[in-house]
Image (cartoon, rainbow, N blue to C red; front, side, top):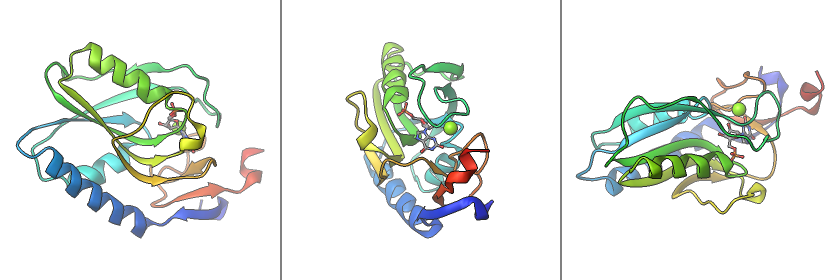
Length: 179
Ligand code: XMP
Ligand code: MG
């Protein structure tokens, strides 16, 4: 698996350090409140787990699965809900945890949905951001790392469902895509 990586973009140590900072910041932001933290599956599952361990306020967790990519590396522009929330968001302070923002379509769709369900507040924390690829006007409230316009894998992010378990993020060798 490691042999398929051309370049490590952000190391495990850098990622963990940043998540500690984000957790501390969000703990301050939500002090005295009990946010509903929503993990956008599948990519955000590792980030979510590490982030909440660094949050000191009481939180409730839920998961949502949306799809826009399939096995391709380009967005289809279609966002489909595959798994909806179990918990009502009505009147809740919602913190959306996302792995990466690319076009912004997934998140803008999700935020609209949560607002229409009367969330009290919505806030987005993404570990990675590729602002150069945005097609809708959307900015995360909290961002770990800004990335260049390249397809990355690891730390929850996949190519055709593989590489999610790498503890760092990197770029695949070009020959992997042509398999
Ligand atoms: P949009 O375009 O809606 O996309 O902002 C967000 C979702 O797209 C996936 N994505 C990636 N997945 N490497 C991946 O493995 C990438 O470089 C990448 N860029 C976008 C991801 O699932 C994210 O939630
Ligand atoms: Mg994916």
